[in-house]
Image 1: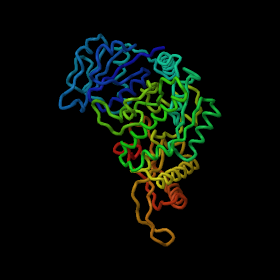
Image 2: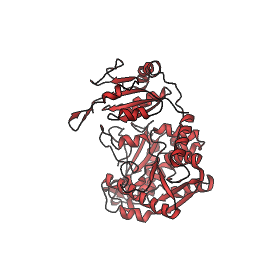
Image 3: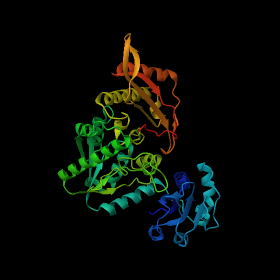
Length: 435
């Protein structure tokens, strides 16, 4: 069935995602669109029950104040205008509280009493709608999916298998930037246990060659994203008849890659880093889901808990944790230190408590002492954060006993490392990853 929907128009607010989540928490689906969306496009959307014009401090673009078209207000759809001076409705709020629970209470009268929305937003309905949409988009054609084994790509795979079955081909690319033992695990789970059409491609030397001497994180991300597409194009030619590329793009990827009223935080390999001459049409069924909703979707699709709640891993992999220009010695040090961190977190039950944890190694060395002699080796940075939607994050307070054990293991077992640091920076001001 089609869910009722509240559309949020971004007129420079910094709270769009919070408002969208608050509407969904009320049981009504919501989507965010730019302020200059046309009235015709809004009219063509199914089941739009109301519009929230969400104003804020970023309503100046290219030196001019931006507005929502008068035609939007004249569609006959209830409008709530918030925190801006272009309101043309009696349902104006002067300002949002910055607490999702309070916003939910403020929205209730508009969403239910004025818009007459039905609280039918849930994962069962979302999955059913997405399966229908994928079938309509793809038909009997074939889809290629980059299957990293992470939460997003796994949920996309499960959804597409329900929608199109064997017309989905999953490609696992080992770009040389994966965690220790990960390529083998992906093959075991998806090919041997889930019986997916899985193609394994070892392209590690190819990627590392492209990334040689590249230090800028944005350039690294775009190189990795573009090279992924090239690999898929080659695999598509081998398979014949591939018309679609599926991606696990989710809403935080879109926000962080920049909108008309927000600057880029960092580009994602699946947003803006795709080559202009790409030969595939995109299939992105998770495009408007937050991370916690992706996990709920995975459970609805019947994926096992240990897959759905697997620690997030960025598309560029260890490439954004080997800071600066990637070198093989630091890449291996990241891989080995990460494996130690994951093992010890599991030993202490922190793997079930902490949302994301990893190590990173910068491209500089520090002086230390090893075997009664001067050493000049790399530091390892440990980061462990908790979040609900990946838009903000807090630091996990790790007991000193655990940190000391991890530190001893890393400096004794990982070649080329003489120092371990713990990153205490929340998001904001830091991002979850260092690059």
